[in-house]
Length: 571
Image 1 (cartoon, rainbow, N blue to C red):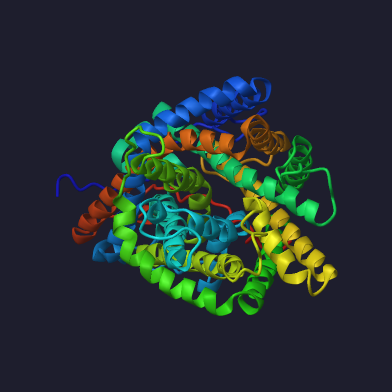
Image 2: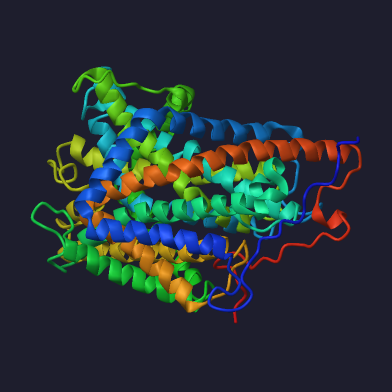
């Protein structure tokens, strides 16, 4: 009993009182701005040099840390499932004893889905199954045939791996850690709070500042990856509705297209952020949900309905059976270009390792949002809800959107129109192929709807990213709504995307993101250890009557938190 003391419920983080940085932790906000500014200037004014250096770092990381990314994400799945099964952990409330969830299940699931998916579905729900249908590890090993029926379920197995439990367990670890230490212990809603069982009050100093800076940089690069894909798709979509000059003859977005798309998207998102989340994100989210349902319904009703059913149910079965092996397997190159070992390692770097880095970099963004909407849930509810329901929704999109594309190509109807299109243009090529024989007007309207949906997703993602970065910079407070800081991060995010796209396309953003995610992956492993330690000790405290939540500890200050984004009361 002597070692059982109440948990830490105070973590002072020094913020500026007055002036330009009023309310901000300058030792987080300023270094983060400097790092991102240097990256922007470097990518724009020295594109060749920056591209070469980033590629060198990327090759080093893929050669030496690919296994790290694979095993780390496997760890996240194991920790999440372990916490759900562990009786002591599963019943604990992410809030005070007896506190009820703030949102009903339907609203909770809807917000989770929108937070973690968004733009990705419009690009990859069609492009990824199609890509894996043409090449995957089984094709490389000669076990299945590229572009043939025996490769369909294999293509879905790998697609589901990337967007299933692995992705959502990564988000869940970050969100669960933030919710646990904020709502049970009254600590600031910022990344450093999740490591208090390991480092204690030292997190008020330099160590805590470094952790939050790493989180801000990872968030910017993770969201930049999402925006990079989205900008290329947005420019392709504008071409489909008659706005020319934004793509070249091969369908690749031009520099003009990048600039036009980013000025429009980042301008709209900055205005939305300045207007406040109640006025901005809320109405954009409503448009997102409505148009998403219409588009998905179109694929289910008028696309490959029965093909999608098979891809959904049989694909999930194949995925679950293969999940342990896919989660832990690491292919190592023999250095002989073109050999099977080389191609397998190369494919793993292009796909799983890229995705694991992307989800890790995106985790502060999605995790902080999940924490904000999950107060009052039990750990078991949170883990199972945050992992399973959004993953199933991803699978639905992949099964019917991607399934329609594969079915149209398999039966010879599309004749390569979809397969030959760029990744961002595949969904436009497919809907045009389906609707143009019926009506040119319907085809144009569908392309317009997808462009509008894409725009709202992009604006919402950028808007939310700016607000969340400011939350971390303001020591977990929603932060002062000083216009210069919102404008800076809006401009910085757009400039990172533009600079890297112009210097090396989406591969340049991918390279920067894989590098930026590496330090935060270490933070997330520490989060896992910290969370398990905290839950174990809280279980012991409960048995011996020692306080475990801030309301039971005399003198503890409850956290002052704003409502979840998009959920503010109407004015």
